[in-house]
Length: 389
Image 1: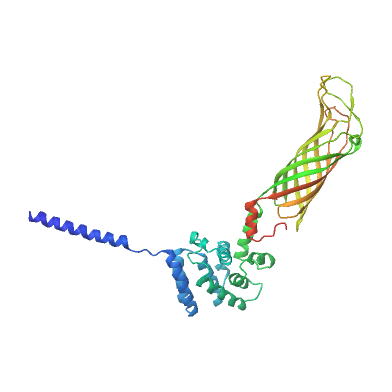
Image 2: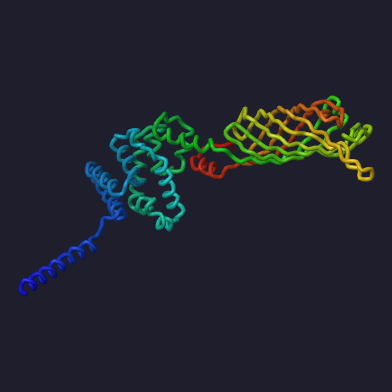
């Protein structure tokens, strides 16, 4: 009986001890990145002001180990390297563009006093509140560092970026030669990636259809059409539909097929065009584009209308259309343009024996159109890449 009692007492004591251990585990406070980042940002300022560089380096390592690479850590590494003269291209690691965008977003938040955004995106901003001690100190430090470096160099560009002109870094990269380094390489890759994306193209067409040779009897006709397709880099691909209309100035002969009737004089004319066009930019600069174009289409017109009184069907003639030409576009904005195009069309309207008229056609067309890819253009805009205008 005593043995059972002793065992019961020992078991109860063990349970009590384990409960205390679990209680301690349940209430033990974990180190959190928000606390680490906030306190590290303040402590780093103290170390740098006291010229304790070694301690600052160790603190940054600790900060990165606990929270991963964040924009404030990246910024501090760059400025410390610029301050002690140890800046090297290797500091501009992959992801530098993301850190630049992050800093620009932070500065916009401060400029427009949108501090409420920080509450929803604390992790994105590295858990360092915007517009406080860390931001003020790094901007002042960067402004002093600008005096150490020559304009047109990468160290000066970065010091300028972190001091006042945070919105000009990409324009500067395009305007000046900073050589081949990690930042310019990453920037160019990003530009190429978005620039190579296709854009949706759409245009309204109005113009004049001008036949030559035996087709001249048909006279000139106004033309209306619609074009839809894509533009990618210098190439343009479009599906085109157009109509030409108005009666001919002179009558011409046309035959209703399979009726055995004699040719009839008519001035009726209503034509259509369905084709594929391909163009390549020969010149594209400052909103001006000069294109070489080519296309293949099905082309034709109604020559004789239906005659219900005599039970006669309409007669239409169709032909192949191979065309070559030149096109010009002037972009009023990056996405909206006015254009002009002239084409020489190789045709043979006598193929189905409705008319015996041979000749080719010149078309001159005025176009109002646009090209756009919102995702592409928004990203190129963020990179300050000069598109068409």
